View 1: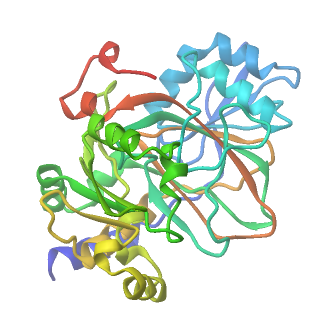
View 2: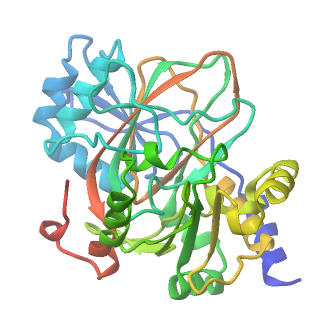
View 3: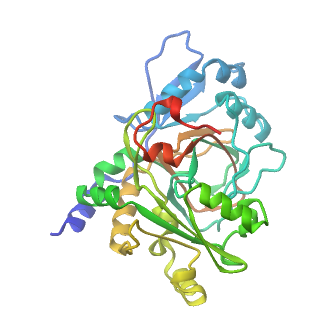
Length: 364
């Protein structure tokens, strides 16, 4: 049996954990209760107020260090039962955890109505899954911290599965991980009209010279296929070391960019309409070689083996360390509204140059 089939068999036995919470031991004076979602795993901790009158913003402001420590250790935190009745309260809660401020200039998500620096979740067909990814890992900078707020819970489906990207490296074949670390990735994005977000909306300008300056500053190759179709090519790592802990993490957007992860009929239609050279999104090995479909299937199996799912409750907040945790979205039926916030922006160059001290990270 070859390596791919042996690994596939191993993954199929593991399964994706979905388990009830198990209370952790606490002191009586603790203002919040802690529990873990997966017995025997530190990944994803849940915090709940010990008293109904706990003020979320005041508590968050007073416990930033604790929250940061828990996030770095566990990779993700589920805040449940905090008094967060609406998106505005959620935004204040997230701001209290991030003194440098929330990121308000993100081009891939629509702004949330009534919010200053919050966004609506990705507008993607309800019956299709949004596959696993680390936010903006294909760009020259990304948020290290990300929050999701359940404004309205779908009556059917709509989970936000999350994955410990440190564990991913233990499930993937060692030779594949080594190859990805050595060769890296090349993301190719073509802003083909009507097939992707308009480039003016993404770059927040209609000035081509400004787009070119932005790409040049970020180490992104840019060419114009025609006056209205820019194409970017960005070389990025597939595996990074976390800038604070030094842990290795499977950090990328391979599933969101590789044609093999599309539904077969969608892939065929896009190839017919645009061809592979104008495909809206693609990812290759860093040297430009095609990543085999079989490799992507193996990565998809590993994601599902690592996935942790929980049922949203209205008012829930999930905070993830985006450099340790990938997220996705399950299909759903009925109305669903999830609000997103981001903070602690990290420059790609600071991570690629090694494991910097926290003081060398540029937070915008």
